[in-house]
Length: 474
Image (cartoon, rainbow, N blue to C red; front, side, top):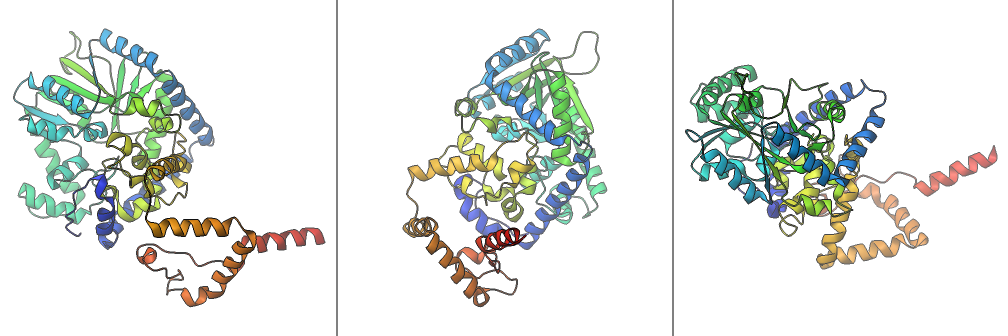
C-alpha cells in the first residue's frame, strides 16, 4: 500500500481522495471487506420476513426519543445515579476529554485501557489522555492495529478494514518485534497475550456506549472480542462516554435494536458479547469497578436536534452499513473523507462536529444513488440529508465559474423538451466514437477517476412511446 502523506483532516478531502483513488491494493482491500460484510448481512436479514416493518419501528422509536430527549435524559440520569453511577455532562469534545482525564487522574498508576468507542474517537480521547500523562491502550484488535500504525479508524465497526493481513503482519513484526506472519489466528494470539498484561496493569477502563436504557439507567455495550468486558470489569474505575442520541426508552426497545445492530453491522444475528451495566459493583459482588462514571456528550448534537432537516441523523446506531454499500466509500475508504466518521453518515454529521467550513466538501463526496438510505436499519434518509447540506453550503459559497456555467447550461436544456431530446440524440449518435475499451465514455478530467456510462440505444421517452403504442394496438 502507498505511504500517504496528507494529514487526515476533512479540509484535505480532495488531496486525500487523489492519493487513494489510484491505489489498487487499498481499493482491493476495501472492496473485499465491504463485499463480505454485505453478503453476510443479506443472509441474516432474511431471518425476518418483516424486516422492513422492523426498520419502521426503530425509526419511530428514535424519533420519539429525540422529540422527548429532555425527559428521557432526566430519567436516565436519575435511574443511573440511583444505581450508584456518577453522571457528567460535557458541552463539547474538549470538555469531555478534560472530564475523563480529571476522573482518571484521581486513580492509580496512570494506565488506561480503552475498548472500542467512536465517541472516544470523536473527542480524540486517546491523544488527550496521552497529553495528560497517561498510557492509553486500545484493546479492540482493530483499534490496537491502527494505534500501532498511528492512524485513525477507517470504518465505524472495522477500524482496520483498509489493511490486508500481510500489512498487519508486517506492522506487528516492526512494532512488536515478532517474526513476520500473516496468519490471523497467530497475530490475534500475539495481541491477546500483550493486552492481558495491560488489563492487569490498568486502574481505569474506558468504553463507549451502544445503547442507554432510560427506564433503568443501564448502559449496553456490544462487542465480539471480550475486550470491552475486561476493560469495564477489571479496572477499579469505569468511565463510559456517550452521545445523548444513544438513549432508548426501555428494554423492549433495546431487544429490537440489538437484533438490528448485529445484522446491519457485522452480519451476525447477535454480537458475541452483550454487556448490560447498571451502576458499579455492589457490596456483595466480587467483580466489576468500584466506580462507574458516565460522561454524556453534546458536541453539536443539540444544534442537530433543533434542526428539523438534520435531526434524523441522530437516529444513527453506528452500524456502518451505509459505508459498506456506498460506491464512493468502496473506492476511497474511510481515510479518504478525512474524518473519523466517514461515508454517508459521516458526511452528514462531521460538518456539525468539526465545523461547516472544515467539512464543507464532505457532503459532495457522494453519488446520491440512495443505497445508503435503502440499507439504513433506522431509515435515515441519508441522501436527502446530503442534499440539504449541499444546498446550504452552495448558498453560502460561489462555485467555480465553469461549474456554474455548466449547471446553467444543463438547466436551460433540461427545461426545454426539444433541446433535451436533441442533446440525447446527439449523445447517442457520437457515443461509439467516445467509448473506451470498457464501454464507458471518455470524459476529460471528470472521467480520470470515474466511469461515465455509455447511453442506451433508445431514450426513456422512446421506450415509453413504444410501450404506449403496443398497448393501444392491443
